[in-house]
Image 1 (cartoon, rainbow, N blue to C red):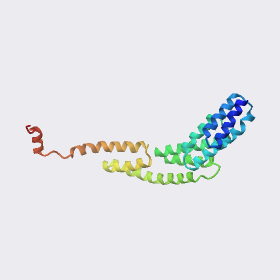
Image 2: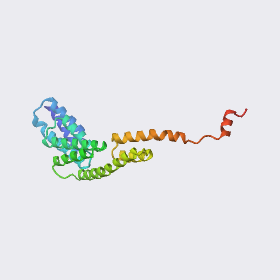
Image 3: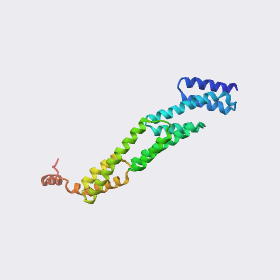
Image 4: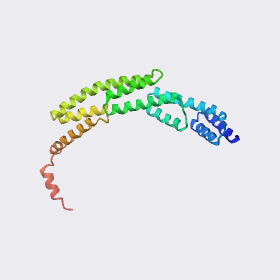
Length: 213
């Protein structure tokens, strides 16, 4: 019991110094000693509150990936909270929406963030801004894809390159845009090689007959 109390006291000092990782380590060590929960519950509750607050702050900052990482750490430390489950689903849904948008699946991404909205207990400004960004990207992306198809149909390969670059700037993992760009470059490269300037005849002769030492 004295060993466990020592861990808890050190963990509380670490918490006061905002060294949450050290505080969690001491809490886990105290719990592994096997003492009654009453000796560790206060520290666990405090650390859990800090962890949940960090997750909420990361979501409000528009960083669902980092929020998901913190949630995983809390899960590994045996945190069981209804709010944590809700925040976990929200973070994963937001990450999924970002992945879908990067593939050009904007309709699915908008549906995903719609579900995230319902999971969060209050309005999150960064999420609302992301929704607006998605809607704008969706409209511009749809127009660019139509133009890209038309340019490919007319075999205007330089235009295909230009448009595919714009498509991929909005959706870096869009497979159709990547394929169109690669096809266009394959069509352009032979022209580039054929149009490369040739060396003048006198330079060729000089290279064939190097000057004597």
